[in-house]
Image (tube, rainbow, N blue to C red; front, side, top):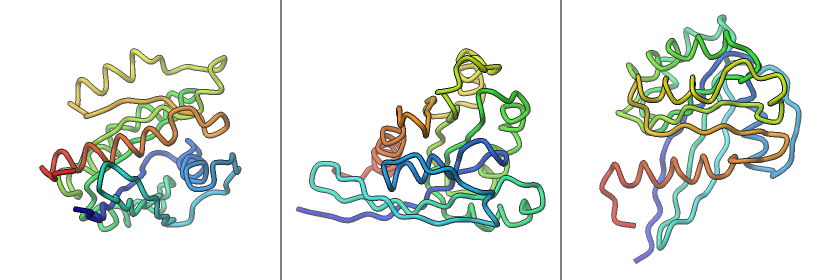
Amino acid sequence: MFQTLLFKIVIVGDGGVGKSTMLQRLVTNEFISCQVTIGTDFRMFNVAINNCLIKLQIWDLAGEERFHFLLGNYCQGATGVLLCYDITRYTTFKNIEKWYNITKNNADNPIFILVGEKKDLEYRRVVSKEMGYYFKKRFQLDYFFETSSKSGINNKVIFETLAAAIAEKRNLDL
């Protein structure tokens, strides 16, 4: 039996951490430098698992403070959340707790994945992997990955993992 499922995903984090470029890498398989997101951007991505087509409706939410009033509404109904920070900017990691609270209070009991962006800039790292793992454990998040939109490392895996985890959490027989 073939089934099609639709899941709403939100990507959140401070401006400039790499959310939009991660999404562009996913849908084009190329590194495309992006400008600041105004409000929100929206993309679709399909993941095939066994006899199931999972359509991810991905909302890339602006990280600038002036757009925060929109976040609660955009998070409603989300079953997956990517909490993103830049491994080369500590303040973006420090602000992850704020993003977590916004999404936790407005989404639909989502799967959370913590994402350290810009892994290709390892030589400029200020947020250690251990700090990421500690945050994941402290807030009981489901997964933690580091990725690079330039190299593509872990990019597609993050979204495939998220799709499978949401389906499993919803007790869907794939």
